Amino acid sequence: MFKRIMALTMALVLAFAMVGCSSDGIKEEGTPSELVQQINATGKYLEKKMDPPKYGDENAIIALNRSTYIDYWHVDSTNYVNQLNHLIKTNGKVLGDGSKRIVYAEGYPDVILAFTTCGIYANWSSSQDLLEGISFDNVVMMGGYLNKVDALTALECGKYEQVERGDLKRQDLIDFTMELQKADGSFSYANMGEVSEIEVTASAVTGLLLTGEKGDVEQSANNGVDYLVANISENDKPVDIVKTVIALNTAGIDATDVNGKDLISYIMSYARDDGSFSFDKDAKKGNEADAGWAMLALASQYRFEKSMTSLYDMSDVLGGTHNQLSPQWMLYVRVMIGAMLFIGIFMLVLLIRARFRIAKWRKEGVYDEVKQRKMTDEQIAAKRAAEAAAAMEAEKAEETAE
Image 1 (spheres, rainbow, N blue to C red):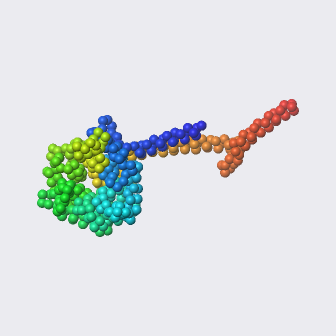
Image 2 (spheres, rainbow, N blue to C red):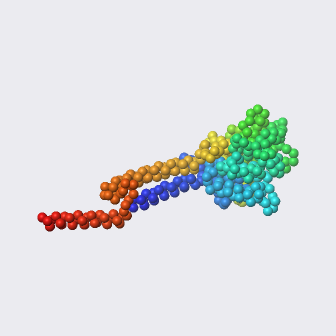
Image 3 (tube, one colour):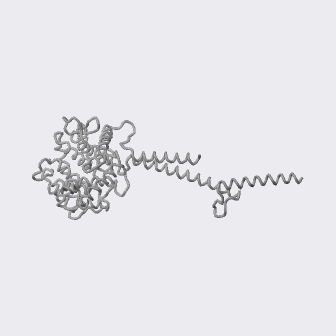
């Protein structure tokens, strides 16, 4: 009975530990801030939409992890990595649709960022297939100039010791990005189409700041920051504002007060009651794509307010452990420590109990010198019964003799 009770207790403790590991959402004491409430609502919406996570869910995966709504042990993180690894391998180490001979060139930077936030790093062999794709300059350029700018952010996101891959060199990416800068601090290139100067500038600033380089690189990034602060407007596209939030937060600037403009409140004005977002306010309901973009801005601002590393500075997840543990992971660690202490105490109790039982068996002569029982429980019971009967016979014999 004692063993059954202890086994049940251990099972309940371990089950609680796993619940702590898999719980979703940001937990705060008291009433959560409006930002946290929106992150939790949008996170819940995105989790329902990603079943399972797939190519195209990069923004959501990055935002959910970096907001600490989930961490890289979460099932969505591991499922995303598994899905993408399968996609890459089945297409001959190319990110794309092999049956249609389509290469998702524009997807490489985002997938690298998503892989990193899920704990897969650019210097690990587990992501080598993907890196063989991003390592070639012509593949990245298939996605356009902005894609090459974003490649700098992708390779710098984890502060890797070795970021040069094949034909895609770190310094080449830095030089290419800086060459796009104009006299007013903005970054742009010819024939941008629907891409705006704000978007290119924000992407360039983020990548250059992540390099940590001083001198001309730092000055170039600062000039870009000045341009964004002076020119960002609520009339810009929401995606441009999202990227500007990330760039400004990376530069250490609060996105809720940019020359009197609250960029976060503007992004949140597109939220729907179910946690989704739609950048078309006339649309009847939100969508996953816009929700993913919005979550990037919310996650970036959240990390800024909590004095954590910036959204794409993922040095805090390198090395296999969190330097800044998420609330879910902290709960998991604490519960598991408690569970291990409980199991240790339980094993100690069993050991002490066993020692007393062994001592008793030795005294009764049913335990040999090598600490092994000589008899089964039935044999011991029979031996004791025989000894008791013999004692009674001896007592009767004594009485008869008297």
